[in-house]
Length: 110
Length: 119
Image (cartoon, rainbow over all chains, first blue to last red; front, top):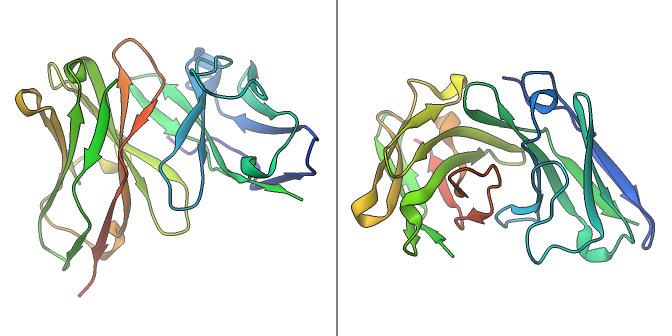
């Protein structure tokens, strides 16, 4: 169970939109819709931003959206804000009953 | 809603044993899956394993199988992560996370426990 593949870093200016990809296999990302995304600020616990590919937990800004095509899931942040600067991890259920995280993406707001 | 509170930071020597705890508050704790996540210094998140509190159904990520033990005591709303013999490579931050049974969103997290293993 290798980590899902994410770009190491993505950057954008305030107000812009950015997209983070998360590539797995048919045994994880491509096999079902249990893909979620987590935001982690330095020295803080992760926070769920998206679940079941495209749903937002209560309280999460509508600027965050998710999608999936085949073995690749994506997180889009629109109207980028300074507070969005953080690390982002995708997460997928794996056939057999466990989970696997992505390698993580550092988002920088220029 | 359930909240998770983890035990405090630990400093251990190689070869020592350790048991971390993750206590839940709220009546529905037994309906949750509790997972343990490792974050080594400067690196990403890694699942170690998870347990269903109600029936102790436990699943381990293959690379951690045999290295750790995950358990739970629903009577005191607490999940545990333990090692019988620590190694320096076990140094890191450990988070517990919770997902309500039937969902795949880990929407509650403990504050993390820093474990340092050094001689």
